[in-house]
Length: 163
Image (cartoon, rainbow, N blue to C red; front, side, top):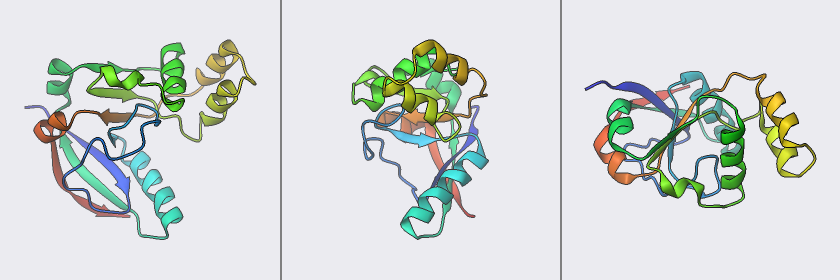
């Protein structure tokens, strides 16, 4: 079994993730979000911790990504492109675009690109201009597990780290 280390940043230990706990209108819908980029998890945990006035925590897991990609309904975005932009916008508008998937992976609409996404969503930037601006950024990575069955089967808690 091929497992990778993934991280979930926040302010609390999450040994048993629940996929339908958060808001629906996030980038990839209502699921449990992890990343294989430790720095990205640290940055997120620090942001959340500052807002909540609590210490940041990194939860570490082992994820059998290969098994998920073989057996689940998956969507993987490899770039900030038209498909990614339309998906993010639809999801943030509350459309159920993630409902057809068990697992979604791709770039985060974070501080590096969120201004472009927001200008496009507000109708202040056309799609072609938004795509040109987005193409100048290398995507970071988030993985959203939308199926509790996949979490239970392929995501194993491996401890926490203080920042």
